[in-house]
Image 1: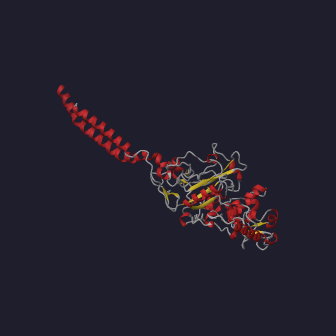
Image 2: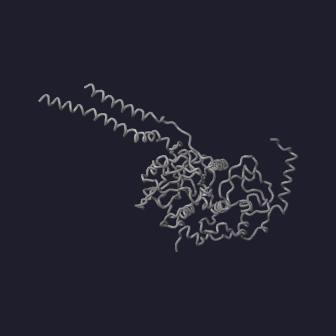
Image 3: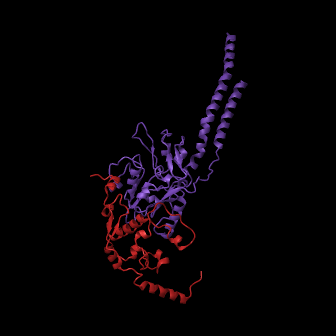
Length: 311
Length: 162
């Protein structure tokens, strides 16, 4: 009897101790410095300049050799398109889209370009357990299809709903997203294709730090013309692509509830446990199991002896 | 900052007045070209023939040329320095606006050039920003292909069939 009680208490204490240690190990709610590359590049998108010509979409399609869309890029009817009540989104056939917004009180529509914002601390990268994503020193968040297992966690993790999945390919499905023209342009110091194509210079390519200064200058020189905010300077820990707008950002489709801390900060307490659960728990519980079953062997034989004795 | 003496102010005002009234320094409509061929985007678009005479007859030089034609700046921000600036030799758009690759690093040495010209658009941006804003306000053409005919390469880029 004594032996039985002590085994149970060992199990109880052991389990409680393990769980306690696992939960307490990562310090809760602690923020950290965002890893920044000093000379990383970015793009400043000025919504007051965009006229919705779709030149950026056409340039992206050609540069990234994406499939031909149903409508030519000169067709402005696409701004009317909605899917499930939403405006157009990036998908496996387009890494960038421009959407039109009729904002009350404005005499002309506003246009917003959507593409990967290339976060400084990308949630897609943090969430990927095979490290398929890389944040390059130039600022791009790139993706390696060779190691991707297709779990699509990055699609859930991204606060901007950018990574999309190539569902059309049964044999080589992969994540499809804007890569800042990394392979063809950025790593050679050249501006991305969409920026080069923009007639209005609504897209401005430069060092991220310089773009912030230029953005502040534009706001300063035209206080009535701009919101006093550069979207992406702090959102989700800061992004390489940033935006200026003449109207409140939520009126042109931006999510203004995105925290200013990297998405990683919200989930790292939990993510810190995962490797421990995966590595320690199997060994720990296998040990408990072996301990329990080994001790049971002599007891069974004792019982058998007892039964034989009784007979 | 030391305020200039009243005498000095009058001197500068007189000097400015003389400079402005001097015919060789303020440009005349007759000096202006009839038309300008804009051919920076020849890969995707046919060159644009800009009717300079029509624009010059209906609008002041400074509504496009900022302060370079010597008739004082239209924009109040330019007026901070260029109220009395004389005409310059090269008044063409490309005389100041280069083809742009990246945003310039904002310099901080505090001189006028680094204070006010840090966000100068490239030639393509300058032309479109200047033309399209005015066209929207004045009822000029604003659709891309009203000014720009696509070349075969342009039709391929925009995937225009037929």
